[in-house]
Amino acid sequence: MTKGILVRKAGGPEAMEWVDMPCLPPGPGQVLLRQTAIGVNFIDVYFRSGLYAWPEETIVPGAEAAGVIEALGPGVKDFCIGDRVAYVMAHGAYRESRVMPAHRLVALPDGITDTAIAGAFLKGLTAQYLVTASYVVRPGDTVLVHAAAGGVGLLLGQWLHALGAMALGTAGTDAKCALARSHGYAHVINYRTQDFVAEVASITGGKGVAAVYDSVGHDTWRGSLKCLSPRGMFVNFGQSSGMMSGFSMQDLASNGSLSANRPVLFDYIASRAELVQRAEDLFGKILSGALRLDTAMTRPLQDAAKAHQALEARQTTGSTVLLP
Ligand code: NDP
Image (cartoon, rainbow, N blue to C red; front, side, top):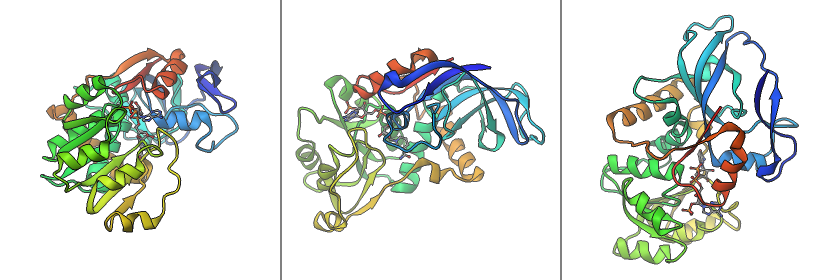
C-alpha cells in the first residue's frame, strides 16, 4: 500500500482526499518509483474541477514527479535500482509511490535536485517547445507572455532572454511584476491596473510583437490579438481565467493576417526521442545557469488542497512542489 490524493467527484480543492491506495509490483517494462517531489500544475486544477474529462471514474491528480527507482519489472534495461529519474504528463502523480513505464522516465543529472526539477520539468519542457516549435523565437524578436510571474512564466522569460529576444510580460500585482523583471523580462505590465494593449503599443512604438504566449485565455485573448504585429503568431496554451469563447478565424484576418496555435505539451514529447531531446535542452539550460530555479515553494503532499487553493486564487509565484 501507499498513500496519496484521490478525487472521487469533480469539485473544488476540498474534493481531494488523503487515502491509502494500492501499489502493485512493476510489470514488464515498468519500474516502481518512490516519489520524492511532485510538481503542481494548473492542468491538475483542470482535471480536479472537471474542466478536462477524466479517463477513469476516480482520479489521482498530478502530472509530474521526481523520484528514486526501487524495483525493476521484467525487461527493463535502461535503468537501475537507485537511479534518480523524473517524468511528465503521466497522470496520477499525487502519491508516495507508483509504478511507471520505464520508457517515459528521464534520468536526472547530478546538479539538479529532485525538488528543483519537480518544479520545473513540465513547465520547463513547455517553455522549451513554446520557443522552439510553437513559434520559433529569433534573436531580436519582441514577444509577450501573460502570467509572467507564474510557474511557466518565470521560466519562459529567462528562456526568451537567453535566446536574445525582448520579453514583455503581464502579471497581476506590482510585486509579481518586479519578480518577473528579475527573471528575464524587459518590461512587465500589471494587467489589473493597466491596459496591456496600450502599454505594448507604447513600448513597441506601435509595431506590436511577433508572438504572444497566452495561457490566461478568456480574459486576455482579444487583447492578445491586438498586441500582435501583422502576420504575428498567437499561441494560446492554457486558460487560467477560463476557456476562450467567441474566437473565429475571421479574428485572425481582421487583426493583420495572424496565425494561431493551440499546442499541448504531450504532442511535443510523444516519442521517447523527442522527450529526451527536449529534456536535454532543458537540463543544459539549468546546468549552465541560463535558467534559475529559485522560486519553488514546497508543501507536504497531504496539503495538496491548500496548494490548489493558492494557485487558483492567484496567490502563487513560480512553482509549487509537494513533498511526500
Ligand atoms: P501559473 O503559475 O502560471 O498560475 C496561473 C496564473 O494565471 C496565476 O498565477 C495568475 O497570474 C494567472 N491568472 C490570470 N487570471 C487568472 C484567474 N482568473 N484565475 C487563476 N489564475 C489566473 O500556472 P502554471 O505555470 O502551472 O501554468 C500556466 C499556464 O500554462 C496554465 O494555463 C496551464 O494550463 C498552461 N500550461 C499549458 C501547457 C500546454 O502544453 N498547453 C503545459 C503547461 C502549462 P497573475 O495573478 O499574474 O495574473
